Structure formats: structure tokens, C-alpha cells
Length: 371
View 1 (cartoon, rainbow, N blue to C red):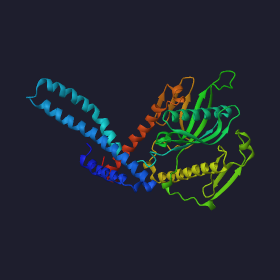
View 2: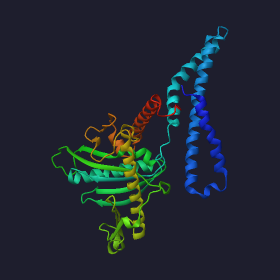
View 3: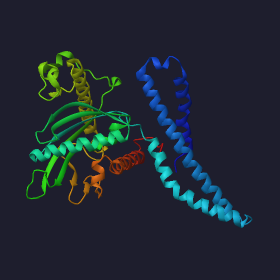
């Protein structure tokens, strides 16, 4: 049972946050204001889940008392018995939901996501598959009301992309898409296959949280090499005849980013800097998580490009995520952007692992027993 006093002590902060948000001067510091808004949302979620959990406990206790009282009216006992069953069935889910709300907040929960998809083994078919993945993510983003902002792309002659980078703009985009990083394998008959044989091809996906101003990343101008060049892709005379494309190399880390999707060199440079900040942030996070070893936050998988995370078998309409042993026979729907069943399973598994980790810390005394 989750101690009510601990929850109430945390919720004392809710009134203070609401007071701060009501002050006229609070919005002057946008970074602090955003942090308060997110803290307020988290505290409200905690309050709402606590109300459901403790209401279920109160219902169970009162119904048990009614059933134990010999003087209780038989009809009332019958109602209490039905209500007791419902409350007892609902209690485990309510307890888990409250426990999750008590976990330390995820600093990346509300961020935009930056994705890079690259064709792997399989030649033209791998590039076509990379294009299919981009379409899948684009459709999913559209269904959730998010926006796609293209950063760079290298189209393939027969369709798809050798490489494509883009940002998914939407609250919680990274939280939902973070586990897409890794190797994606496809098994199907390519359009270019005359004899109907099934081929295996691959594409790799990298996912980064978009950096925000409050991340306090220091990128010195002298650490950057900035090159401009003419776009090699379609886009009309302006794009092809001016040096609007930008490539930025971060010399200390060797990270290279480029953009040629905008007509303006200035806009492409802004996109490059946004991607660069996000990659440096991701590298810092990876270094921090490596120090934590088994306690690393991203507990399902590293998201390393070399890790095969999923297989798309088109002849059998089957999708298998190898990290959580999940198999769905609805590949056609997933490719149309209906990814929630898959992503819910990944997020849910990670939440279970985070809870287990927190309970282990409480057991060995390295974390406060708030959950």
C-alpha cells in the first residue's frame, strides 16, 4: 500500500506552483515558466491518480465492513458485494498508475523528437524500406496532431531514401518514439524482383530528444567548421544555383550535420544547429547512462544502430519486436501509422522496469520510500 501521508506531502507543492503560475512576472522567464507548467501537470496527474487509488481503498474497506455486519440489509449487502469486486479488480491498476506518478519525472517526456533513417543492407530495396519507415512515422505524427519538419534527405533513384533526417514536433513525441532507435529488418518481395523471391533488407533509425534552451549546452563558435554548398536535389533553379545548403562539423566530437531543405542558407544553418545541439545532448545523456550501468534510464535497449530491434515480415503481415518478444499480425495497419499498440507495449514495458528499479532502490535504502 502506498502511504497516503507521503503523497499528501508531495502534493503540498501543487498549491505553491499554482500560486507562482498566477503571478504576472512568472511568464517573463520562459524557461522557468515552462518548467513550472510541466511540474504543475505532473502534480495534477499525481493528485488525480491518488484520488482514484484511495477512493478504491476506502470503497473496499467500507464494503467489507458492511458485509461483515450481521445487521446489514440483504439488498445492501448484495450491492456492496458487487461494488467490492469492482474495487478490488481496479485496485492493482490504480496502484501501478499512482506508483508511476511518484517516480522521478522524465526530463525528456515532453520533448520533440529528431529521427534519422538510413538505408542499410539490401541496395535499392533498403532505400525503399527507409522511405516506408519515414511514411509510417509521418502518418503516425499526423494522427497525433504533430508536425514533421524535414532537415535533410538523399532520395534513391528507384524510390525511398538512402538517408533522411527530420524532426517530429509535438508534446511527448520523443517519449513515444524513443524506442524506435536501432536496426529494422524487412522481409518481402521487392518491386524489382521478377521471380517473386522474398528478400531481406534493412534500415537503421536513430532517435534523439530535441535540445531546448534550458539544457545549457556550450557550443563554441571556434569548435565549428561551417561549409556551404549547392543543393544537389530537386527544388528549382534557386536551390540548385545558390550555396544555400549548409554542413556543420563539431570538431571536438566529429559530429557532422547538414541541411539543404530550405531555400535560405540562414534557415538551413538554424536547422543544422538544432540537430547538432540535440546530438550533443544525446551524447551527454549516453555518457551519463553508461556510468549508471544497469540503472540506465533507457532500459529496454540502447537504441544503437547495430542492435536489431524489429522485423517486418510482409508475406505473413507480421511485425515482431525482439526486445519485448511482441508479435503483431497487423503489419499493414502499423505501416499506415497505426502504431499505438506497438508503442504502448514498449512504453509500458519500460515503465515496469522503472518501477522495478525504484523498488530495488527502496529495498536497499538508496531511494526514499515514496512509492
